[in-house]
Length: 379
Image (cartoon, rainbow, N blue to C red):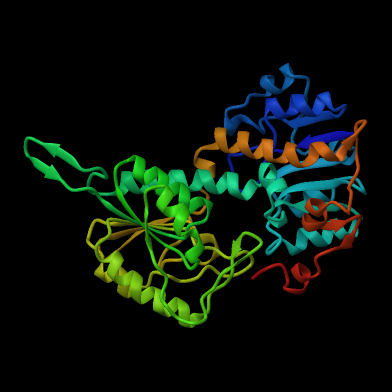
C-alpha cells in the first residue's frame, strides 16, 4: 500500500500530515510512503529527514504518484484538481471541513473514492489519541495567550518593584473547551487572574482545577448542555442573558479570549460593540472562532483592528504559528487512527468500528452523511 503525503495548498498552511517519526512507523507496517518535495519544510522537516527513514521524495503533483497512491494523508481538504488525480478506491484522511467542501466531496463521490473527516470522530475515550481537533485546539489556546500578552499594554503577572506594585492582568476566557482550558492554564502560569464563562455548568470543576474562576451561567430555564463532547447551540434567550452578564466582566478585563464554537453552526456572537465600548483602552480580544463568524463583533480572519482603542485580533489558525509541534501531534493523531486499519500492508475499513463509522464521510463513492451535501457544503 502506498501512502502519499502532499504539500498543503491552502494559503498560510505550515503543517504537514506526516513526520519522519510517523513515516518510519508506517514503513514498519509494510507500507511505502511518498512525500512531496518540500512538504515538511515549513514545519522544520527537510526532505533528507524523510529520506533517512526510508521515504521516497517525489515532485509536487507528480501525476503517476497520485494515480498509484492508496491513501492520502493531508491536513486540509485537497483541491478538486488534486483529488481528480487520485486513483479510484483511494482513501483520503484529514481535517476535511465537511461543512464547506461540497465540491471536493462530489469529486470523491464521482471517482468512487473514500474519505475520513477527522472533525467527525466521536468524542469517546478510545478516540482520544486520534483527536486532531483537540491536539490543535490545545496549541491554539496556548498561543492565544502569548499573542494577547504581546499585544497588551501592560504586564500579566503581579510585580512588586521599588517603584510600587503592579496589579495582575484580568483575563476572561469565553468557552471552556480544549482551547479555553489551555488558555486558562497558560494565563495562570504567566500570573494573570483568569475568569471563565461557559454555557455548561459541568465544566466548573475543570476550570477551578486549573486555577480559574468560573462565571456561573445565567439562571434561566432553557440552559444548554452538550452532546458527544461538544457544546450544544444555546438559545437566543440564554445568549442574551449571558451577554448582559459578560458585559460587566469585560468592562474590567485586560484580555478576552473567545473560543466558543459549535460544529457546523455559526459561532455565537458573545461580545457586542456595546461591550467593546465599555472595555479599557489598550485591552485585547483574541477571537479563535473568527473563521466561523466570530464570537466578537468586528473581528476579521487573520487581521488585527482597533475599535475604541481595543485591539481585536482574528486568530484564525494559530496552530500554524507553531508548525513543528502542531505537525508532530497531528501526524501522531493520524497514525493512531490508521494503524489499526492496516493488515499486511493493506488497509481494511471496518464499518462496524464506531470510530470509522462515525467519521467515514464517503465510502467507495457512497455518501454516508447526506446532510453535508444537502446543505450545499456551507453553513
